[in-house]
Image (cartoon, rainbow, N blue to C red):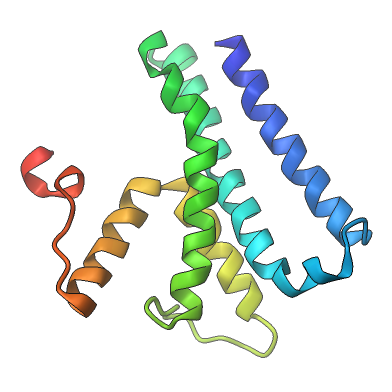
Amino acid sequence: MKRVFFYLVSWVLGVVALFIAHKNRYFPEWVDDFSIIFYCVLMGILGGCLYCLRGIYLNACVRGTWDDKWLPWYFIRPITSGISGGVSWLFLSAGLLVLDAEQSTGSSDIGFLALAFIAGLNVDKFISKIEQVAQATWGIEQSRSNSKEDK
């Protein structure tokens, strides 16, 4: 459990370091063209790490149900969360997902980042939502892993 904790904290510190490095212009200028995508991936990772860190204290401390069989999930989750954060940018930019809240001037980036964080926090629900969009837009059936029969 300790190695999972330190692994997740390392991800969080790495994300913070990347935010700071970008803010202080340690990256080449061309990276600025992709900064919102970059930030969405980072926010997704933060959301996933938060979810995992919460899982550690709930399962190890509160419920006392820690089980090492879940270790792969804890190690893979920040990666899947980062991918979900990036995909959230893609679907918002394409207009396939719409933020319902009224936006004020300059707030669109905050909406992108908020959705990326939520996508990273709850990957399963986000994938289910993306599959619903794909089904409604292109007639693509939901995957078996997200069907109600499996739950």
